[in-house]
Image (cartoon, rainbow over all chains, first blue to last red; front, side, top):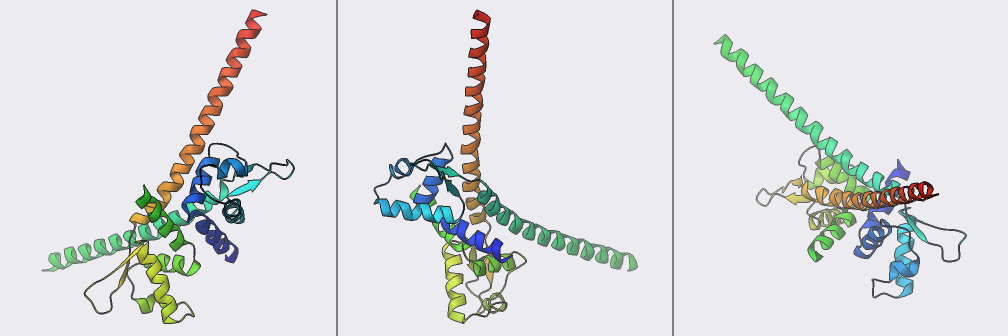
Amino acid sequence: MVKYETQLDAIFTALAHPVRRAMLARLGTGDATVGELAQPFDMSMPAVTKHLKVLERAKLISRGKNAQWRPCRLEKAPFETASGWIDEQRSIWESRLDRLEDYLHTLEKEKGTRNDDE
Amino acid sequence: MVKYETQLDAIFTALAHPVRRAMLARLGTGDATVGELAQPFDMSMPAVTKHLKVLERAKLISRGKNAQWRPCRLEKAPFETASGWIDEQRSIWESRLDRLEDYLHTLEKEKGTRNDDE
């Protein structure tokens, strides 16, 4: 549970910056080198590296270990974790709506029974 | 576009903390006062207020204006914005897979034509 929460923290933190979202969108079209990822941004290399570290920590990207240019690759599992959490919230709202509906039906039935009695 | 990016920044930042996610899950079951939201956490009131401000900034919650106890209410639209962005990424991957598939078909067809020629 703590691990799941820590994962969600890392994933949502990583998604909370436009540069990192743009990098993920770029990687969605195929693997890229750090240079290719940095290219659209007016940004120092240390700043780019920092963003990549945040993405790596969230396991949203992985990097080739052997090749010298170590291409970045998108990892899809954390997207599932994030949208899974959002879906979980929706199911909380829906079960609340179901309970409200059940309660309304009970009220209506009780009202019907009372009217029959009168 | 800038507004959309700013919204995404605020929403993902708000979702990136376990206390704020727990508050949202609680509000999914119904409106709550600040005291009710704070109750499960061993946390000072200023810390609670700070988390609520982050949620308000992302428009994930709204607060009653008139009543003195100003209950907090969950707002669902930002959840749609967040999962919309995730779905957008999925459609990028899928169109990439479609393109790869088309390319493979072309290669196979070309190979077939070459074999016919031989």
